[in-house]
Image (cartoon, rainbow, N blue to C red; front, top):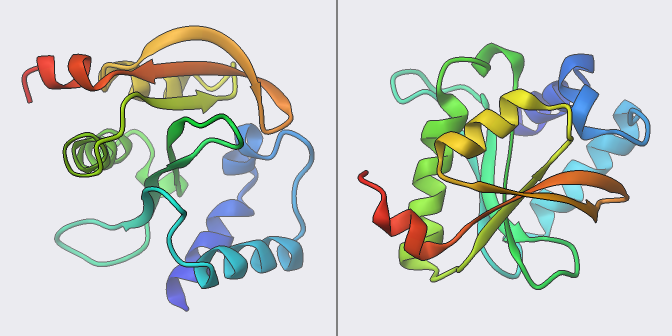
Length: 159
């Protein structure tokens, strides 16, 4: 339950909301219901979501995962973090572990990502991970920056 409350607090932070909830900020009750449904539904049909914490001290920093991108037939890398984790390498490190699992264990190819066009911090994370920009595409009701990483490109980089 602590992770639920920490996730809710993260989602309701106006700075976190800025690029995530582009169609309007959720109210606390509605967002709590969304999170509970996500937790109760278990894993997505393909992939999974993982809570991210510091190795040395437990405590919710955010989440990272791979899961189906709407009705596209593609697998998406997604992540969201509390402000306390921003700029500390958390997003990159967690995404590297998730990509390793997604490509090598789950056999996904390619893995894609979408982000708000103005979210340069998220785009820098994707670029550090080896994703390539493929322009913009319409997903989640918005025109978003679209990135892709093939398994071959992932495996070709020194890790």
